[in-house]
Image (cartoon, rainbow, N blue to C red):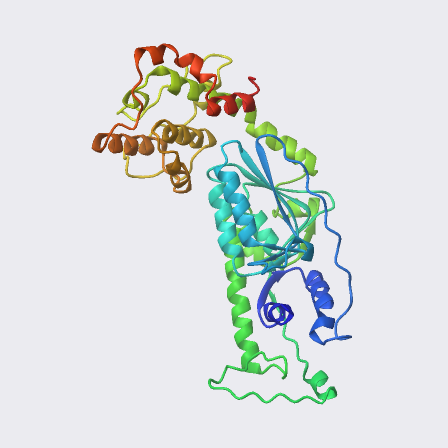
Amino acid sequence: MLYPHLAGRLFGVPLLIHRPKLDVILSVLAPRLGLDGELPQAALPASRPVSSPTPGIAILPIHGTLVRRTLGLEADSGLLSYQAIQAGLDAAMLDPGVAGILLDVDSPGGESGGVFDLADRIASVAKVKPVWAIANESAFSAAYALASAASRLMVTRTSGIGSVGVIAMHIDQSGLDAKAGLQYTPIVAGAHKNDLSPHAAITDEARSMLQAEVDRLYGLFVDTVASHGRLGADALRATEAGLYFGDAAVTAGLADAVATFDDTLAEMADFLTPRTVQRLAVARAESFASSTPSIQKEIPMNGSVSDPTPDTGSPASLVADRPAPSANLETPTAALSYADAVEVAELCQLAGVPERTANYLSARTPVHEVRRTLLAIRAEGPEIASHLSPEAMAAQPEALKDNPVIAMARARAGKE
C-alpha cells in the first residue's frame, strides 16, 4: 500500500496548503495509519464538472490537492500533479488552434516540491500566449502561486484566494505506541538521522531545522508571487497567510477583478478575437503557398515577409503594431505573439522541416531568426523547397483547396 509513503509526504515536510484541507486529508488517512481518534474526521468534497472550452481558448482545470507526482492515485483521489498541469499547459502552448489559455482553479494547494518551477513555466508561457486564471471557488497557497503567474487573475464573488504561507506538521505518536505496548529504539549513524521521527517528541534542534526550511520556502513563495507584479514582497508578508474572498481579494491586490467564470471566458474571447487571428493565419498561409515555389522568395534575405495589403477589413491590419525585427539577429526577443508563433509554424512547414516548430516555439526564437536559419540550411544543403513545373504552378490555386493545413485554418476562421 502507498499509505506509509503518503505519510512521509505529509508529516515533517513543509506544505503550501490551506490548513482546513490538511486536516481533511489527515482525517481520511488517520485510520489507515493507525491513528484512529487522534484527528478530526471529515469527508472529502465532491468533484466538480469541467466546463466545455470556447473555440480558440484552452481551459486548463487545476482542481484538487496539488502534488509533484500522483504515483498511481489519479483524479478519484482528489490529487492533481504538477506534471499533469505542465503537460496540459505545454500542449496548449504548442497547439496552433489555441489563442489563449484559461486556468480554472479550485484547489487548496499542496506540496511545495515543483510548484515554483511550474509557476515560472506559466509566466513563461504567458509571454507567448495570453494566460488568464480564475479562482473558481478557491486558489489557496500553492494554487495561488500558480494562479498569480497568469497575466490576469479573476475571482468570483464567493471564491477565496491567498494563504501565502508554509506549514509543516510533526506528529508525536509515542503515547499511542506506549498504549499498544510498542517501544521504538532507533540505532543511527549521524546525529540528525532520527530527527522528526513520529515515535518520539520533536527535539528543539529538529524543530529549529524544520522551522528554517519552512522560512526558506516561505521566502521563495513570497518572492515568486511578488515577481508576477500584483503585490510586493512586503505587502504579501503583511497578509500573514490570510484568506481573502471576492471583492476583498481585489482590494488587497491579490486579484485583478471579480467576475463569474462565464464572464471571464467571454472577456477573454473578446480580448483574443480568435476568429480574426485565424483569418490572419489563413491569409498568410495562402500568401506563402500561392506566391512562388521558391522558398528564397517566400523567406526574403532581408528577414521580412510581406503581409497582404492592409485595408479596413483586412486581418493584416491587426499586426500593424508588431515590433520591427531587431538589427541584432543573434538576440532573441523576450516573447512571441500568437501571430508570430503561427508564422513560425508556417515557415517550418514551407521549409519541409515541421518537426522544428516545437523547438523554435519553446525557445521563443524570433521569426526573423527562424527565416535566417532556414535560409542557411537551404544554402548549405539540397533544396528544401519543391521544384514545381509551370503546369503545377498553374494548378496551384486549385491544389490549395485540397491542402489540409489551409482547409483546417479556413474552417477555424469560419471561411468554410
